[in-house]
Length: 269
Image (cartoon, rainbow, N blue to C red; front, side, top):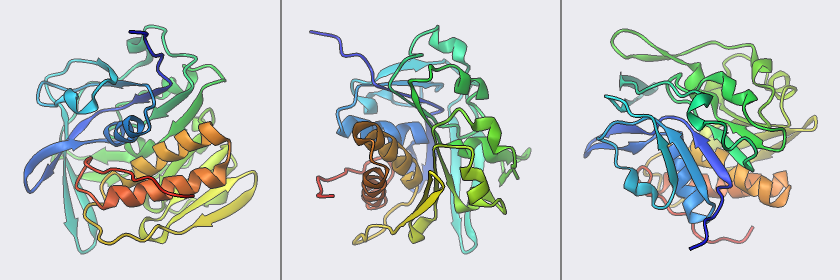
């Protein structure tokens, strides 16, 4: 059988999220790979998990796993004031050395830190031909000795300038002006939960509403799916508006399912 070269590399910890039914797979890499598989995009994953994470959920994805004693684990608690997170364990830090000089010219790379685990030097690892999407949520998290997660106030967005696409939530940008953040990137996307998303590109702003859904089951991972979907469709079509519509649709499909079990149905843009 002919080997198919990967087109997509995703980097970050696959994690386990604590739900009512127990520990379930999570993490931005996991959600993005689910979508990549549905779109038949040949993919590679760089992560770090212990034996309690079942990689078989990824099917034929090439996996580079840095062995560790503990998988990253989150306990997300929904409260009247929003989601509170407890981080119970963190796997091994990911460094470019793990790629052994490979994948530098890959078509698409998605950097998905969830717990400060993806070294920033990955931004300089790839050739200029690689389209890099950055979902930096994990670079904006800190936690205390009891694992209580809080937000890091961040201003130096220019440090991420090599990324072509950056996706952040309203909560993650804090009091920063999104127009100022957008000046650093080709495409900056601000996700606003139930209020939709905003694309900043070429000094213009485009607002996109959410797709209506019959029932919201689980909002975890919707932003991660949105980012991956935008990356895939932008590279395919070079049409940012179409990519935003596709990303909004995929995020809607995500919230209709529990965890990573979502399926993006065929649709007409």
